[in-house]
Image (cartoon, rainbow, N blue to C red):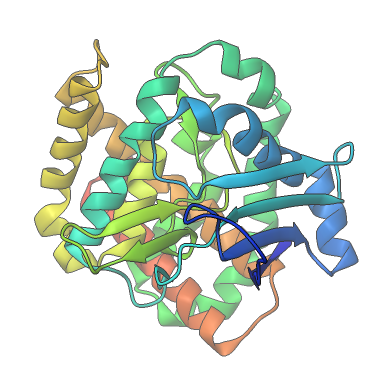
Amino acid sequence: QVGKCIRFELDLAAGGADVPRSLVGKFPSDNAVSREGAVALRIYSREVMFYRELAPRVSIAIPKCYYADIIDEGPQFLILMEDLHPAEQGDQLNGCSLEVARTAVLELVGLQAPTWCDEGLQEKLAEPPDGFFADMHARYNEMLPGFLERYAARLAADEVDIIARMGESRSCPVYQPTATPFCLEHRDYRLDNLLIDERTTPPKVTVVDWQGLKVGRPLNDVALCIAGGLDPTERAKVEQGIVRDYHTALVQAGIAGFDWTQCWHEYRRATFAGFGLTIISAMVVEQTARGDDMFVAMAHRYARHALDLGADEFL
C-alpha cells in the first residue's frame, strides 16, 4: 500500500447545507519503502495531477475533490475528497453482480470519450517509448517463478500454462507500445477501487485510486473490470452484451471510426491486462491468508478469460 485514507468528521460552528460534515483525506504511506517506490513511479504526482487538471475534463463518477497538492514529486501530498458513505468498497475476492459490473464498465465512457486520441495527454502521462515495456516484461518474469511456486497448485493446468506463456512471449499485447485508439486508462479498474451504493437501480459506482493513471488502450480497463469482477461461468454468458452496451455508449458519446469488430478484437487482446497486475502485486505486498485467496481468484478469473476468448493466439 502506497497511501492511506482517513475519514474526518467535522464539528462546524457555521455553514450551510452544502458544507460537508465529513471528508476523506488521502496521505502518503507510513512505510518508507512504499513511499520511496511511489515517488519513483510518480504515483503521488499522477493522482494529484488527475484531480487538479484532468478531473474537470471527464464525466466518470469520482469523489468531489476539495483540495489536492504535492511538494515536488512527493512523498508529501494531500488530497481532501468527498465522503461517499454509505457507499462501500467493492470486494475483489467475492466479486460483484452483473448490475455492478455493467454500471462500472459504462462509467468508463465518461473517462474515455473526453480523452479519446488526445495527443496532449502524451506530454503529461506517456511512458518512455521503449524501456517501459521491456521493463514490464522483465518485471513479470522476475516475479513469475515465486508466484507459480506459491499458487500453481491452486490453479488449473491450462491456467498455469497461459500465465507462464505470457512470460515467454514477446508479442503479448501488454508488452506493445500504446497505439491508436488511446485514451486515459485507470490501469487498476478493480472492485477494490470502486465505491458502490446499491440502494439505487442501477447501482451507483464511484471510481477512486487514480495513482496508476496513464495513456493506454480503452479496452484494458473494460476487460480488467469484467473478468476480475464476475465468476467465469457467469461472465461468459453476459460479457458480450456488456461490451456491446459499452460500444454503443461510446458511439453515442461521439466516438467515430471504432466499429464493433475492432472493439471486440481489442477486448480480446486486453484479456492479458490483469496478468501482470496479479502476478507482480502478489509478490510485492505482505502475504496474508485473505490476500492469497484474492490473488488465486484473480489469477483464475483472468487466465480463464484469456482462454475462453482464445486470446492465446496473441502470444
